[in-house]
Image (cartoon, rainbow, N blue to C red; front, side):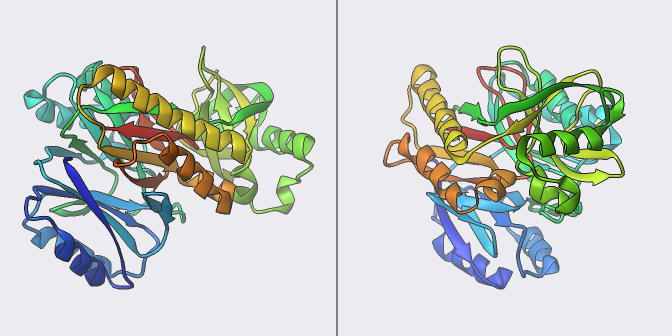
Length: 377
């Protein structure tokens, strides 16, 4: 087993660090710190500790973290200690565009080996996330296996959120090379309830028009027709978390896009929505969502059995925070379903994210919403 982990909690960051340092196995070569963005910690203290650390560090702040069958959303760090060195790369300035991203990745890939597995942690509120995943896939090779997710907080205000031993970064992606083969399963379980609608005007994450009509008007009318809920009488996100959008894909589940706010008559999503795409209104229920998560885990385990000759030791789950907000207390069923398909000795950790990253069977690396991505190694 290459990883050991501990769950630490405290009102002060120093309390968590004291617990981590007391736990740290003597053969630790690197640490991945998965921390909750909802905390009472002093950020200067966090940054100072990272810079003073003598150990290679990767990680970030997320809306929640996972350990075993539990989720944590306040004052918690899951510390994943690796007994092998973890080669990593921080790609800064995602908002500066594709060429700027490629210039940094090209320096990293000079020493890469084809088919390496990666954990990618990214500022979930950055621009050009899809540009990053496209460039990453093209430069790292088709046999690359990847899992990851978006860091940040539920106030949707962009701020420093990714950890390295140089401090806390924002508008960046952190690439961590994993020490053993990775198999990934991806499912979401949301189902079509209305549409399709043609995206007649969009720009990045902003959907301006559907069917040559204001996007918010179409979205509001569809929700009212299928649920009786009047969007104008409720908090936008409280309703929108129940009704994501789905971009049509051939022979696959729709690619989910999560509307997080309305700007005038425009829908702002976590992830780009291409102009001229066909888009649907989606809805879900707890049973179908949890069964989809179980299928993702099962697919990952089966792929590992098929392609790897090493024993499965670690499961890393990236689950969208909006699934938690939708299912509320029932979300524990989702974690139980994932755990049920894992061998008993396997450690299970992960993040509740602002967007998910993954690919299956050497396919394209995608930026996902409201989706469960399960990786085993």
